[in-house]
Image (cartoon, rainbow over all chains, first blue to last red; front, side):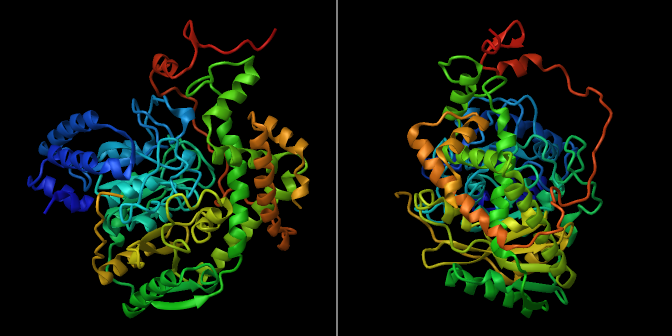
Length: 489
Length: 97
């Protein structure tokens, strides 16, 4: 058996037991990348030499007993919107085609301190705006479970790299579902923690009030382990939360006896594919058979989450992306007539269509005369949505539902109808609006062999409940065998 | 409702956004922003009278820390990223005539 099919925690244990060296793990991953990248295109940058160099250092530290953690020596891929010192960081945008950060993001520092080896930077939708990874300026990532389909997005490269065994785990960021949805489409496990749990320092901002970094991994155990490593209180991120309860692996308990699980009836309306619905309800039954109390209820306001989200996200985009001006870093246009012309031409040439469209929408909803009607209205609706969740969590420990209405769409079928693409975020975005943690894990596949994802959402700070429910489900479910695909597509 | 997006509005928004659009892009932006705003108008079905706008989900206040320099001097590395540099500074197009 190849070591590539091991989970991150299993690999680290083998390294610790001296059955595998760190360098072997890195070299195996690099050969896998060399064999599969042409087809899947998960990465923007592959840091082969740096990884080999780091492997030697980490091996020494493991041998000397200085590194004993559960991720020591494990190769990891990082979404290309997290800064890594001296490594190209593009956000999959032309405007950052030559940007070399002088510092690393806090989450990456935590991983490196734990001995994880960074293999490269993964492809994504440009500035994380999109649900398919097709808005990248550096090519389209394919879904390893069926390469005619998208991997989802925006952390599509991270999800695909885990699924294709081109890394052992990855980091992504989730603003409206950007970890959970691609994890679901690619049949891996993804988790967005409570807002403020992982420092956003060094994460290139999309919508700061919604962005959160989290893991994409092969199983729930890996997810909890990674989150435990990257969660930290960071004074460099003013929205970072001081938490004492980040020992998430303590929640890896195979038991849901008496746990109250609510299924929002309003998640099962029109638009939800029958096969997805069936798989989700089957998963609910598995948890019920394990002793959970499972009930249907009305969450309310579900249809208002998308307009609320896109108003707030666009507003924050228009502000956050003002910094890309062709002065301090990044792309600058060649010919221009004065400062303002330089700004305009640089940005128009450097940003892709989706990004420009959201910047303009955001500028509009924040502009004088429309601010109250759109932006403030959305913030008021956000308060109502938060309240609806507060009410639900008075009754339930966990909310169970689908991740997306369908399995992964075909390549090229989403971008010509942006509204349809936005609507596919319906089950994931409210967690961002309300700051809630959510985990997604595979619960079946459709007739094309495409994965179906189950989503478990918890109240703020209640990661442990969703980890426990997910772990219990995963144990009861057993292993899912994915279809093998030929290399020619 | 889409008629609130006039050609003038698109001009204005492109100035706010610091973007230079072709005629084709303007036409497309007008249609897309119009569609999105029509969709956003769905929020008007909700009565939000008396609801405080929620910018942050947790009640956090200003977070202060001492203003102490902790990072080393990175001037050279930072300037390496700049499209234009002169005498150790960012070079910008002429801003005053």
